[in-house]
Image (tube, rainbow, N blue to C red; front, side, top):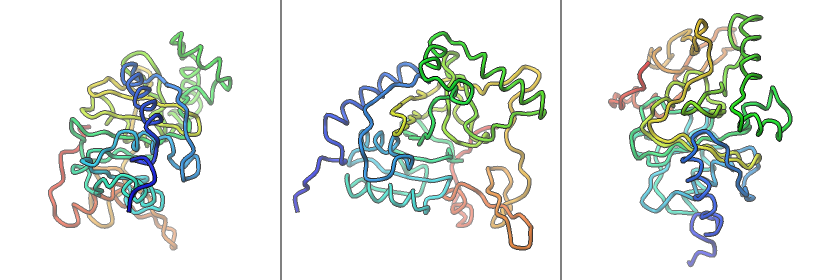
Length: 284
């Protein structure tokens, strides 16, 4: 049966526009590039921006992995993976190292991505200044001036009142020494994985109509004071299925009030359970 739609669902003009905007985003690391976000067959806020990036880049020779908070079998991940496979015929996988394109919500895989792989992150709110400067026009001006004093003051007040930053996810980072960027709602545990990573990271916010990128081997530094360095979440337990405590763990409350833990990255967890040697992990 002959297909009645363009390859990868989006029309050629749309894919061309997104690719051009991505080239600009790669050329200016961390800079938010506006684009004409299209209507997609899933609700805005469920990864439409990242999905448009994936559909604009993927080809028949690619292998796709989709995860949602580390899980390959969540409703969001399954529906996006099935949609892309139906629209392109591309192969899919749950193995991080087999994939050429990885679309993710809220996690960066534990296994170190290699050169040539593309990580596409779903972003709900791309503007890191949103909570300290509600005016979009003023936020753009502050980015142009490189003036992030409001973020520094907010971070200082956190340390002054609580002794640490309250930001558990979407912790702001300085990219290539120029633009402060929202890295998407990944946990603090994943922030160091972006620094000098060999893979290309693309971020898309469909509802906000913004794209931005972190090219390979780019400096990505979390905002922190010299005497109050950035810290990741502490590991409070061990995985109930493997006993591991060297990667990010999900806390799972039990009916009796106890809290059990399990490795968040499902693909990595399955490798450990099956006795398959995983790839190298990120250092630190």
